[in-house]
Image 1 (cartoon, protein in one colour):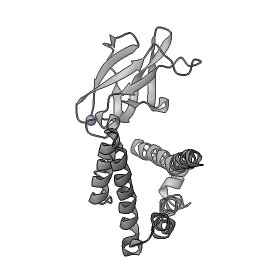
Image 2: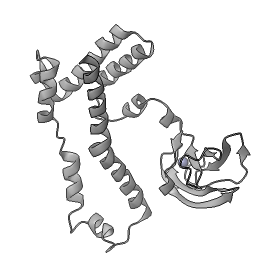
Image 3: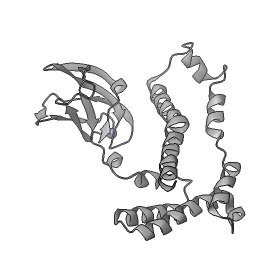
Length: 229
Ligand SMILES: [Zn+2]
């Protein structure tokens, strides 16, 4: 299940006291293209919500949409929360990283084992596999420099070997005043639909990179630190 961002709803229709989506722009769970779904009006209702289907204009596969009519998250809102059934989104992130080209295979294997032993509550095995995951990450970036060094030292050296600035710097290049994207943002050139979709992906990644990920790591760090102090 993937929540539909209200910004991705192009039009609504009335459903009792609520407004429910009629046209949604989102990624198709079948072909992964971002496209426009016009929801069928033959709703199947249940206690908490309604389910409807819509076929993707690109790949023709049917997708199910779940519209929560009972519990509106924000009580001030008259817009119903909507989800798309997307199997890939409901399974673990391991399946999403497995297809990335730059991730070492031994890291994926170690991480998958760590998840398995953690799920079976095997605490010692989880400790062993977690250490292996961290070592696999540092070995990937530090190569032979990591040999024989304690984990803390390896992590300390990591920022020297990973170009953490690169994602921001490449964005900065893209936004230079003579570049198309900059002209589009200034409305000097019209932005096409595909670019708006890519722009949304970019915003999401940027927020994730600068706020969400550092925040998550910081929170876990302080939880661990508090636990051992
Ligand atoms: Zn599709």
